[in-house]
Amino acid sequence: MLTIGEYTLHTLDVQYFSLDGGSVFGVVPRVLWEKVVTPDHLNRVRLAMRILLIKGKGRNILVDAAMGTAWSDKMKMIYELSEWRLDEELQRAGLQRQDITDVIFTHLHFDHVAGAFEERHGRLVSVFPNARLYVQKDNYETAMQPNLKEKSSYLFEFTDALGKSGSMELIDGYVELLPGIELFPAGQGHTAGHQLVKVTGDGVTLVHGGDLIPSSAHLGITRGLAFDIAPLEVIREKTALLDDLLEKRWLLYFAHDPYIEAATVRQGEKHVVVDKAVKV
Ligand SMILES: [Zn+2]
Image 1 (cartoon, helix red, strand yellow):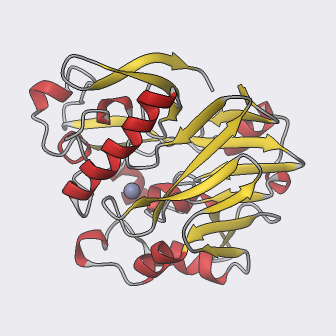
Image 2: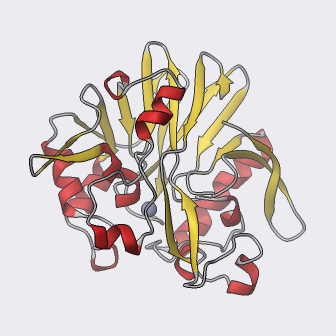
Image 3: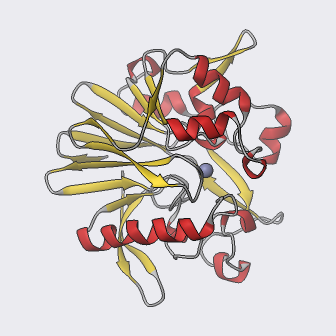
């Protein structure tokens, strides 16, 4: 747990999955990234899908929702999907599903949105019956009509369930959701309408790195995901964010890092590296 101003932040360690190491570390040769994350015999790396819970001002806000349970056995095997520990993790924070008031999606790639829905009587329904569900308008539009590169990352059934949930809130650009909780566009490099979340209070700031900097192994400026639609944009966006993190001593939250939840960063010899890891 971490306190920032009037808010307490908690990591919900709900689920893990595996992706091909090459796709996670883009252009970086395996000899370099395997020092950071050990691949299995199929070249896959195990990644977290953390949900960040922000409690305060009578609200219980989640950032992203992992993959959840609405998956076929085949997909579970391909992604080596772990069990779904949502209820246990909420309970540790003294909450139940119905207590969640807001879910902010950084973007609608399936590993960020699918866990907000579950199958009931052949339909996908919201796991959080009382929550408003926030996404950038640009991102919702691209998810509804994905380009060929992202077709397998935006799965129609989840985008459709979100659109039909009656709880979706489309955001257009920067918005302050509550005092000290800001949603801001990350740029278009990872995907169109990708947004990040910033929590500020009492001189402390934490930024959720979304898929712009999904793990500490992605702090290196050219270490992008193979899923990024515009790698040069990602480099520009990451440079701007890292400048703020370094200069203002902001904390960075890693949604997919298998080991580190959040950290301050410092300029290393070759690139920006973790300074101090912080438990959230
Ligand atoms: Zn993504």
